[in-house]
Length: 513
Ligand code: ASP
Image (cartoon, rainbow, N blue to C red):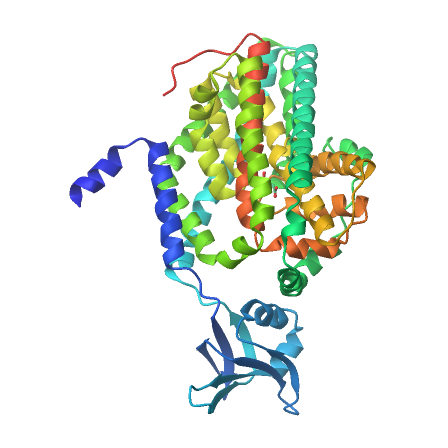
């Protein structure tokens, strides 16, 4: 045992993370949250109590005052029961109780009444209970992202020297990003049209999903999201840089840091130098901090994966198998073939070396589902393993994390076609082109945090009149696919960073550590 621990301690960080990813998934599977248990918290004689109900045959919501039955659910309806309760207003919750019935093998009935319910929840297992350790790890990475971007971009821009160079790099970057997103969407549309996952979804599964997840999507649909391109562009200029920092408005921060960096080259050296040196030291400090925090990665990754797998209902993977498969094949194609070719052709780099260099990036993106949390790791890996200088990473990666979402855009295209197929809506070429355009804009507008892609999907659905309620179909599997698409989102940024560094003649070929 001791020698295993010692061996584990001594292996490389990415191997450690990879191993805990596997063990975490196994642990989560073993301690999967049961779909046949519910923890009920209720009030009895003024005292708060809780009980666990298991393997019920029938659950009835009853109105306490009259005893009237308000809703009835069967034994496979855990999710429906929970979302039915969540949709109650505060007052309603107080006024309802649940009556649980079991049918004994001899045909007799046993029943239990829980009055004045305060809460209904799934029963947490150890795999889910350790989630806060993972959340802590992600929060540590996320808090580095904003100061790191600010400091390193100020230094980067001031070393680029003038607006002309910034503009040239910026233009190249935008062209790369837009082309990559368009390619990703085209791949997604092609696979979805060829595999036709929507036609493979059974009718009863479709109805079950629509009923089970409908309450969860109400709030998402009611969010007023619109694509206002002009407004988005105007909003890049912050009125108050401090509030931009406080609200993690990445585009605004990048804009501010660029202006500061460029203007620093226009003032007297004795004035500009201390400022640049301060930010240089500050960004060095942040990068060092990423290294320290990454030492916690094995713990954090284990906790996050075990909680995600522990909460995951595996039935849904079976139900949505073809949809998930279509997207995963598309993502893998983009990740390895398209990005691999990009680094080969534009960066002159062996793709194997590239993917080795961003191993940690892919692992953290997968576990965190957040491009923002992965950004500090991406900057560190690109600089240390791929030889991209700081002045390029500090510019290209934060912008990439915000606007370049190849995985998310492909997901939006596949999901839109899938939902249309389920509803039997035929999408003509012109409509598929509209999907391409809106998915491109929607993915740019997607914030680099978990689960936003599905909200922005509503814009894509609206653009071609696919019923928005359709997102209920794919909701249950979204977290898993979010993990996969975030890997592609972050890898795309790294690939473009190497290509731009090469085109500027500053890509240093280092030996990967
Ligand atoms: N989680 C994704 C990211 O951070 C965004 C999304 O697709 O929801 O890149």
